[in-house]
Image (cartoon, rainbow, N blue to C red; front, side, top):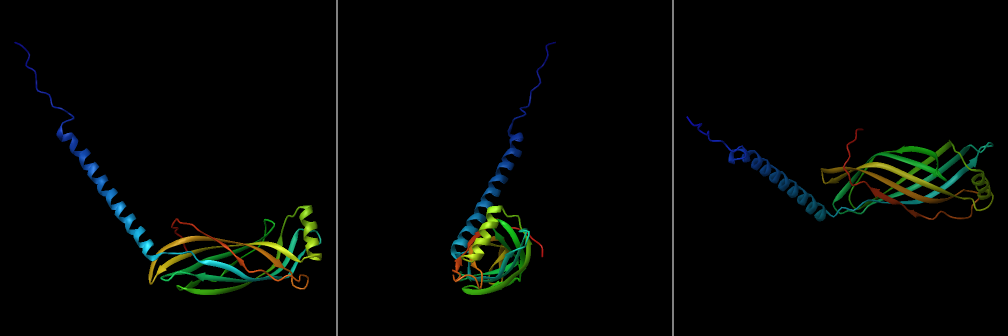
Length: 217
């Protein structure tokens, strides 16, 4: 008796293609949803036309700025007036976890915190602060010489002021998102009583981090 060949089933037939087609359909739907959400956000931002806040240091002066006898500590009293402008017509900013840092030739000599506040659209706020105390520094010998020469001559010192904070971008009562912002101000600060040079109001560089961040109070 001759062997009868049994019919074989094609493992790659229509039934096996169904999971693949379902997966492809799901991927297309997900891609379409992502595109729609992305376009909605894009059109929203274009309509709202958000602009970053503007920082200016309008007043800055030392009432004390000297080195300790061993040249390892800076003794200072620094008065600052910072003007913050919100140029947006619809968007307000909530400023939280505001930290300041002051540097002399790359050496941080002070850091502190400012109070949180909300800034409505099209408003300007002036923030006054004092930095006072003594900070340990490591200056090269030529920097020490230059420091003492400035004290006896121009009485004007280069100071980098850095401000870091988180801002909640608000449209009315709606919180659009939380962003990390970095501000840097390159200042030429006169020492009161020794310098005849007035402080020149200085515009600061504002760097928005475009990535949303999550933080806790």
